[in-house]
Image (cartoon, rainbow, N blue to C red; front, side, top):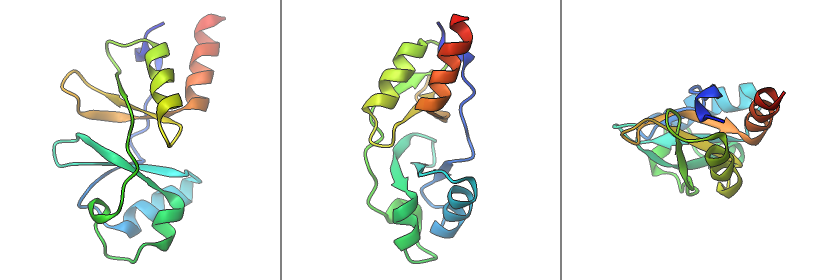
Length: 123
C-alpha cells in the first residue's frame, strides 16, 4: 500500500529559527507531544518535546535547543505504508517524517495516523 494515502501534518513542523513560544502555542494547543525542527531548506534536524518547550526560555530559537534524532524518513510519493510505519516505530517521537524526492520535509504522521491508514486501505 502506498504512503501517498497518508496526509502528513505540516502544522507541527517548524523552522530552526522559529522561536520557542511559536512552537509551544501550536504544540500545547493541539495536545501534540512533539514538534519537528527543520533547517532553512526544510531538511529535518530533529524533534523537540512539548515538555522541553515548556522548560525553554521564551525568545530562544528552536535550533538552539537539544533536539532528539528524527530517525528514518520515508518518501511520501514513492515509499509504502510499511516504510512509514517502520520510520514511526524507530523514531523516539513515535512519529514518521515524510519527505519529498529531494529529502525535504512534507510533514509528519503519528503511529495512530498510520494505523488508521492501514485499516482503511485493507478494508
